[in-house]
Length: 579
Image 1 (cartoon, rainbow, N blue to C red):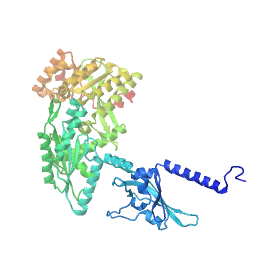
Image 2: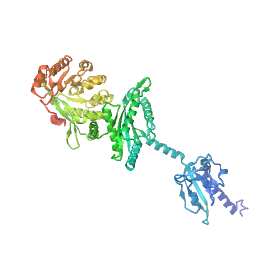
Image 3: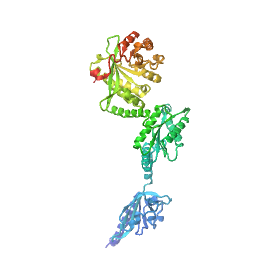
Image 4: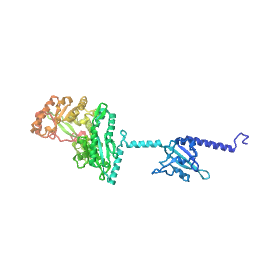
């Protein structure tokens, strides 16, 4: 019947279906990116898809009939060959995933890391017919993982260990010191004058210089020592098996090497300095973080003493004690900034010759967590040393200009003439701060007659070009500036005219006991004569008694402040509507 109709018989139809199914399986295997190998019960390869041939580098003719176990290689921790999952599967075990150390033998002879599995293959009777070995090449994935791991632990510029890696090594050395009684040393190295290179030549040249410095340091260290870059211009060193005195000598060698080196950037030649802090790593050390802090403290002491030197951390050292106090203030300052605990106090500036409204100098205080109030001389030195003045001064400017805005809006303008805001020397040459200040003045619509800005005479002299530009930018908008603590520099008479300040404040070192000091009287008189000839507003600071006031009036001073008139108190008490 089948023949009569031209149709295949039952056997032929089954063969066609089987053929079609096999073709589909082969096409599927060819399309799979993973290598697939089928073996017989003895582990000899019966089939290998194109991916298996491509990954291994062996053509089909060199794979078929070969023991698959020769492809799959495993080694134990000791490097000796280990039993592979394929052997266990062919003995009747269940499916297994390849362990992480699995490798594939390749035609090129270089073993390839792989991931995959081995699955037993049974016939309908339940007998083991062989196994299916599936694998994929993970060499690129693992290489990328290793690269990322290396990058996470090393500085991208110098290739040295980074801070995280350095701290881990430090913790390991500390643990060894406790268990084995070893003694090591930690060096905290900070380049002196490095910012000059970045500022004058740019960061690209600065990076090249850092590479040069890293090389100078590395060649002077032993094979067991560890050198790391732990900050922009900071390096850390662990000196292996080195006691405190030997470590200080080694640090001095590094300091001298950097001091003698000359770094050429284009046509410029730079001489840098190096400040080094030395701390001991031994069984008595509390923890790695504390050891690093001790070395950092010693480095800061070295900088404080002029830089270009090595300093051993000793808790009893007076400079170390002062530095620890500064570092403690840093944390408190940052917390106070976060919690808005900087407060403005005010001291009256009194007009002596007229009945005009009093003016006020704004003075900064820090409200501590326990509610006590810290004066500026307690925390400002630390803020200056650790670069926190910009944050503090921005906070002060916002508070001051916001206060003036509220007073104006509340109709309290008649209660005061102006509020005087102190600015540090770092602000004078900071274009970012200058732009910030002008922006805040515009946003708060601050009338020029309601605010003055005080900068110290010494800051103005050390930053003459910056001070001149800063003052000019404010004066161009009608705002006035005062030179504070005038007379302490005493070279400033020649600069008064060129700086363009609107007034000056005679330092209290000249007004104290003025009635009994003819030298100070002569100095104040000369200040008044020159100031008046330039049309400057002159304010005498630190006036505490009536006798001093009478001498000042006789010398021509027309404005004064001090305890005789007013002791500083919270601004909201002086001008209630400012709250």
